[in-house]
Length: 197
Image 1 (cartoon, one colour):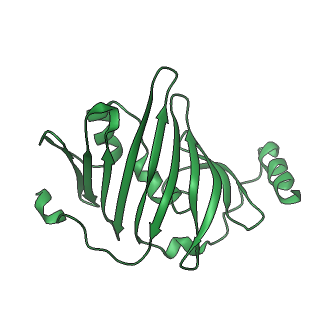
Image 2 (cartoon, one colour):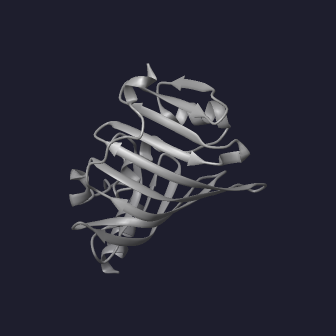
């Protein structure tokens, strides 16, 4: 509690830089497979989707089932770009997933930053406005790129403390992510990223 009070004083002073987040073991984690649910809500609408996320280095597959009533979606990407495959066999391409989701689904979903947030880390290339840590030294809350991220619960997986319940909010959207399963051993992708091109 004292640590949070000191951090608040530093932020209110306006003339002291935000202290860096201590190094966290999850930064070493660059491959995983997770399953869970994402609930997205606005002032007028609510959606719930199942998520299946596989990450191997910079390459990823992100499956979203039944978003916005459009059936299953598959995002396949790496540092060179991303492709979206829809249930009705349509294909869309963009340089990054956030842009693609905004253009196709008209939805804000911060996949770029979520790559870090999902591991309990701040996004490395984005401005961090503020953060708090819990008693275990893990991120409890942060504000970055207009999003507030609230870590509700962590679980231990193969020696790592990983989030399994978190809430993201900005001015328009509230996103609740509940992770039912983490797998940290390397797993093959269900389809080949080389088929994107």
